[in-house]
Length: 82
Image (cartoon, rainbow, N blue to C red; front, side, top):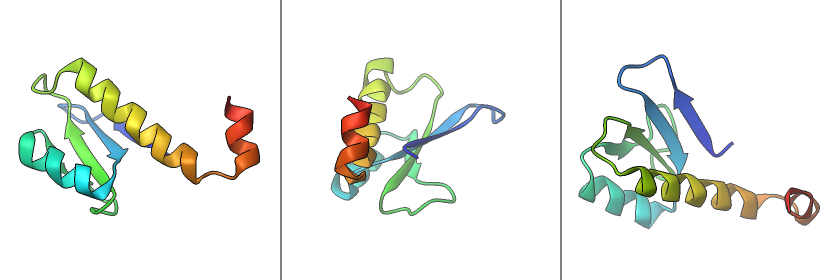
């Protein structure tokens, strides 16, 4: 699991896995980024999708989350994803 999207909440929120150092940096730089709600707060961020974060940044963070999870998978599973 690399993302959790809360489509029922208003505004929408998304939880993304994140490198711990980068997670703190993003929380400091963006008011819409907080430690992961109901997640391991060291490795997850909750992003409030309210227009304050550019779409390109959000896409980059989703890719980062995916890559973190992908790297932790067994080599055979990683190969199957290619």
